[in-house]
Image (cartoon, rainbow, N blue to C red; front, side, top):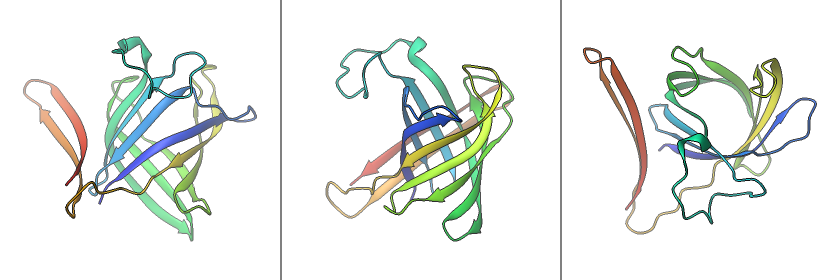
Amino acid sequence: MGSLSFRKFIRWLPDEASEPTSTLVLTSPEKRFVDIRVLLPDGKNSLADNDETLPLSRLDWAMAGFSSSDVISDGHSLSQWKHWIDSRAVDAPPDEGHMYAQPDGLSTLEKGHMTNPATGKDTEYEEMWYDPPAKKTGGDKVVCVVLVMEDEKAGKKGISSSFIFS
């Protein structure tokens, strides 16, 4: 089965943790992922009460591609995300982070370093991810679908995703 992950916070060290976006990542069992990060309205902690169509300018970052993970030790792995599509760069390099399972069994702390968009400098960061358990609405199936399309002749490619509960 795939996974659905929500980011709880990002922390650019040594700053305090914050969450400027509503971030959702869907990963299929085949390790294809779609990661969408939408800037939150000022003073809001969620997009849940927003009933308007958001302008494209609210998109902070969107990426899709393929992930992999290697176990380092119990509860610690090194994960890598290869961006096949990236809203910030045409040929984005893969990013990676050390993943640490948290005691609640549903959260993972990611540690690594990457370019802080606010400063343009390579900076250590921490992100807390929450993977809620999938809930069935009826029947006995929970399906994660991530579709990949590539048309080399036309120079187009795309990835879309969905969770299906039945």
